[in-house]
Length: 244
Length: 323
Image 1 (cartoon, rainbow over the protein chains, first blue to last red):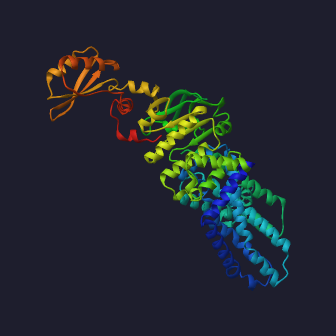
Image 2 (cartoon, each protein chain N blue to C red; image 1 turned 180 degrees about the horizontal axis):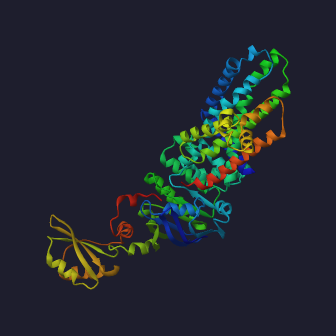
Image 3 (cartoon, each protein chain N blue to C red; image 1 turned 120 degrees about the vertical axis):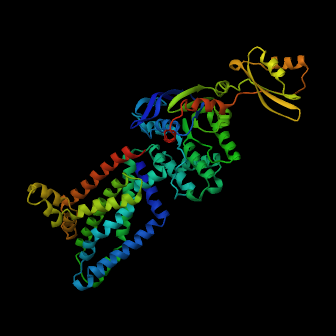
């Protein structure tokens, strides 16, 4: 546990030691504002809630989260510092967990900084703050799922651009798996069980129900186990690829 | 403290390390010699637990590196090749991170860091980010990181690479100081370094062990070992060469150069036997005017070349496969 915390602290401070953190946060806040107010029409809807913000969030994450995660392991391998890290008395599991927690908390900070949106709707109307809160929980959990994919993909290559692009494609797949364009491809020949399974893997299905204020234990279990599976694959990949 | 037994590493069909065995005791400094791509770094990576061996075992302080990697890593200080570090951190931030991972906190942590900083002369760059440092400083940050927890085993991959002569001297002094109660392995290309700090040398070429012994024994493998360099006044003469060749234990004589009525011969002995006395006597008896008579210790670079050169020339690419 001590080791996880040490690595977590190092990773988090390294985001803020470079412009990465500031650039990310500024862009994230700018884009989320644009999506919420212009594309989502927060004012025009005449409803005091954050649905416009949450409904565009999966698409915002699609590009921004892989930008954070692409360097998590690719950079270590490129610079050779992985040799240092892996010869310290730290297990791969601890290293993966520490890095993941740092990146997750970092996105959590960015998410927290969207609080002016919350203030705005509270100023304009009388929103159900419990729904808003559960929306943020869902947004944070979904960020973890994107990150777990990104971290795992980052471990297969030493090239950050490749990690970035592949992460986007994989995340895109998990967004779309609940959409007809993916499901139609399977309907007609695949058994219903498989179609249900594919559609239930979608981020959107689970995220949407949480943002509507329905905090179902199954959705939480979905995100947590999703993160767990990808991080487990991440550990195996780091173990296999560390010295390539 | 370090026991390496029948260690091998294969990458697909390329054998990087081929059945190497050796041990290093406490108080010993072992030098790894070998050309680039010979398998020195690969061997070190297996000892430190970064790479898993294809076969064979590594035991460090009674812990098998494959079975108890964390225990082994706790006891080793390791400077990887090229001294990688987290470039965006400051020197002090980086050392604090290492100290935390090594399990130190509070006053002891600060003491350990101060001690390592002092030993590797990093006082002036403590608050600079590592990426802005020169190659020499980066190397010293790597050394500071390796010695911070006062490990029982120290493994340094080219510790003096990129340092200027003064810094090299400092690092060698540091290694010598620490040698008493540690087992140390260093790899190097610089042969004088082996002479200066190592108690034992190992030569690796093509992944296999070519030699294991003291630097002195390594020198004695040189054809120059106990050869005599003799400078005489006068022009080269066949007669002189003939007379020298008649001395017992003299293998051959080579004319090195002659200029301005001064001629220098290199006299090689059979199996490194001592011939200086006999040569001296001959010169006295013949009444030669001796300008210089030097007994050579043996040249490491000559031994090194003969041990590590391929007997048959292979295509270039096979030499460039990095370990």
